[in-house]
Image (cartoon, rainbow, N blue to C red; front, side, top):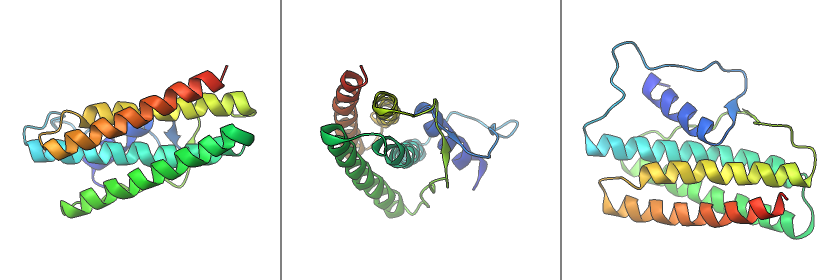
Length: 169
């Protein structure tokens, strides 16, 4: 994976509070510019970051769901399905641009131990905060269709985050 894609992937993962298991952080190459002036390149980077956040959310909801029962478990499964749909939409958007989507990591390190329903709900809230952060970055896209997509991502993530915060106690 080129350094620029690694940086995008790690930034999105960090936004969700997780880390890739077994990998050390990477930095941009010396002299590499972190600012892009090409709007299409910025939009693509935003899509990649949003996709990376969705990869993290899919993984994290798999963990959180294992600790939940009843209505919270059904909510986690619904959120997992929603994140899978968003992930697939982002992959298609990137492929339509002729860009290889960032792949999901095999595993991610959780930001804290998940050992009960309350910690699972806290993790879910953290995942939604990460996807919301990625959506906010995409909201500045040059493409109006991407801005609308980012608005929907942000609204969905914000609503789910509020629910999970309430459930986490």
